[in-house]
Image 1 (cartoon, rainbow, N blue to C red):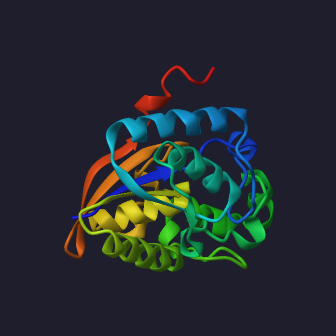
Image 2: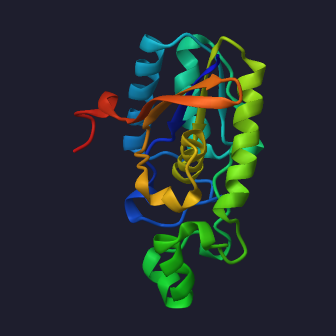
Length: 206
């Protein structure tokens, strides 16, 4: 059994503005840095982490560095854990996308598993690479605890796969900034112990 502490990165300015972030390399904002430190304290208190892996994007790496620091670990970026490729939507607001791709945006919210974002990825593409990475990391750390810092879309498809659910259920899961999820491997399968836990963030935000 491997324990995987799966974390979403902390808040950024684009989280507040509700822009399609994707591969844009945005840093944490002030709230996000406070969230990352609170998350790090929770992880250090609760789990004996031996390795910290992260999406290579700045907002995830910053969060991962906070988590790694109490353990004296170095963050190991994994390209396959990068956020979804939003293609032509990246950096745009929902209103801007709706003006140019109204049908694709409607599908994104009503049938997300059927959408290939213009110039970008589908959820199926993301799920294949994400799960290959998660399975490889778990196999490399038998009977140990590792931390993986990712993104809301990435984490949701990982959790759906662990639950044996299809990508059509994408909007039925929440992933708040700096949410903690805990998965345990059972051979080729997973058990979800904790999902979207943000109790460590109480009282931090206005």
